[in-house]
Image 1: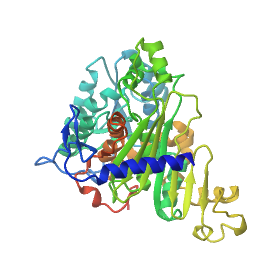
Image 2: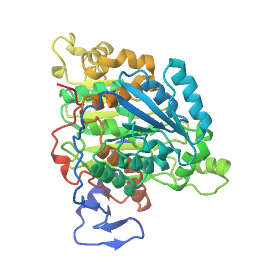
Image 3: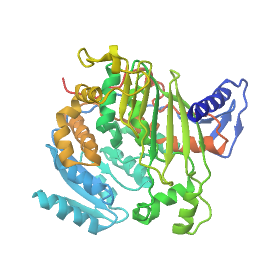
Image 4: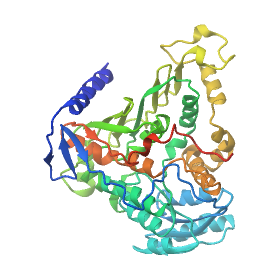
Length: 472
């Protein structure tokens, strides 16, 4: 009941903002204007000579040569995962601290009897890595503030880029990634690993086979109490960022898998959002303890509602401060079915939509409850995504959040080696990352609707549905 009331109030605010008539533009001192009671960020035009990279592919790269930047919390595992994939060479390693580079050399490459990689360190070492002529892909696992400068520099030096989440932290940075990818005709993929979790990929396959009917609503979240981890972020960069920024600053884990099901910029697009947050209580206490500051911009709980061009909705939540079980929500609501991952994994479906013979006792299939366990198990088997079925055993062996990180890396290399469009393009990176600044703008204006930029510049209508490319 409370959630339904929230939807009603929020959608009323959204509708009010979108139906005001007349021109009511005012300068805000911010990187946006307010037009007809909605916040509007500038959308630069595509300049001459700049080409769309929607469904972009390059000639096959038989052996993908990789340079890794950032070997702190995420980088070493990424290097290790790549050593399990055929046709990959680790050519260069870079970190601010040379001892981290040496750690990966000894404990990953040498341990597997692989050649040592070229070494770079210090404040500018990453630039030297990007300038090498024997690297195809630069894999970036640094703090958020360095994602865009490094990705842009790498693309400008002819490299494809894979960059950790979020790919960018502002609308301006999102446009930088899009424009440079279009100018250089290079791939820029955000490493959104949650798109490759086993349940999410099964649900994507089920949705594309019509089991949920038309999916009209999705939910995603990043609810993860980071209290045990704050001190391990180099130089306290993550808490410092949250201390300065309101909004859903880490939306991509929950948003990415939902956007794929909803065909975002492949037949539909996100158009408006509204966002609200609670006061900062735990965050403020934490910042006082760790930073000796009295202010904290990021609310303890942030809630965002998004409307698409086709009228579908997405609910996002962000909370990294309070004691709660880990939760990415992941819900799909369709006209004929429902999927849910947290806290209970299950489905609600119409019996007639299930494969013949799967439901021997239709009386146990209730529209008001989960399908029985044996039907759920059958669904997870029958609709296991073909890509998961192909690589699942090795993925679970290699690991990385249970194997989804390995599937992500495997797919990246597979697409490069076969000259296929990547599963996630630079427009995904921009759309999913831009939620941070857009939600902050809504919160700062009492939940005012915010128009989402169209990073494809109108091309979102040109592709009919999201698909994971495979060679024919």
